[in-house]
Each structure stands twice: as C-alpha cells, then as structure tokens.
Length: 48
Image (tube, rainbow, N blue to C red; front, top):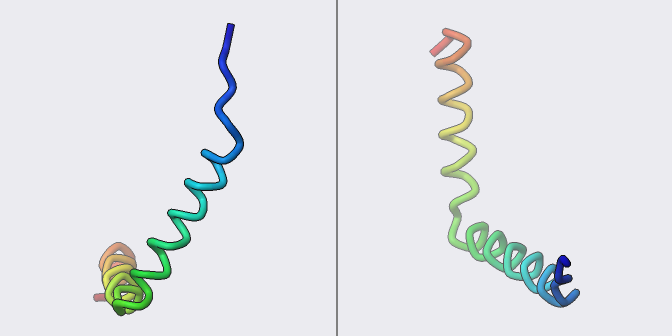
C-alpha cells in the first residue's frame, strides 16, 4: 500500500523554491546566470 504525503509538503517545497529564487535575484545572480547562458549559446553556435 502506498502512503500519501501531506499536502503541505508540496506547498512548502514550492514556497521554499520561490524564496530561494527571490534571494538569488536579490543578490544579483540572475545577471551572472544570463551572461553565462549567452556565452554558452554563442560558443555552441560557433559565433563566439
């Protein structure tokens, strides 16, 4: 028989993920990730 997890576990995990994303944006990491993504894409295409 399979046990069901309480509903709050899923909601809590989603809230924790959103909080971590907000903290990363607050620290300015979004610009770093975007710059790395652009660099990788340009290298794969062969432009950079």
